[in-house]
Length: 228
Ligand code: PGA
Image (cartoon, rainbow, N blue to C red; front, side, top):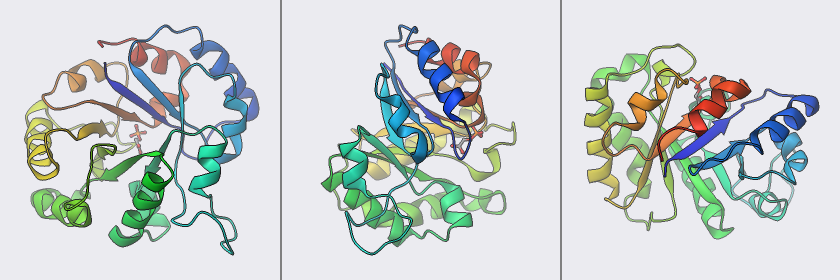
């Protein structure tokens, strides 16, 4: 069984969500599918057959934090997963390794499964080991059995360029050594129905985090139905 996560980012409409739910509910997949729509659409997924996640949460459960999403409330409305530290959150909204760690902690305390994203930028490709070690430093003394990590090279997100099988396997071997053998690791960045199988066959890859292709219902269906 693989973990197939859809990250809609800030896309989709009520009508699209309703159509997506109707069509995906007809898919009989043995994989673990998790859909992360924009927060404003989560309520539409009440009768969804698969799992729901949020794209972000705050590190506190309640208080004077205008505009933030409480992990406690996300759990209450049916989320079981939450993405934290996506590269867009880091680049556009100023999230740091420290703030990502706090969000991770809040997610765990609320029994949400965090999907922690890491990855090097284009100009950091040669130093990926240092970059990933730095992003993960705060996690290394923690219990990580309930955490999923997603390796998303920033240069691969939305570009159509994916790393070779060899480089995915090298990075995932490194991550397994760093985080422990039990940790589940996803790959994300330009995944589609054409390349998904090849990536799922890479050693140590437990699943996929899919942006653009998760907004195309037929594409997402095909990926959900892949090897278990
Ligand atoms: P992409 O996005 O699949 O569109 O490259 C992946 C992501 O940002 O999680």
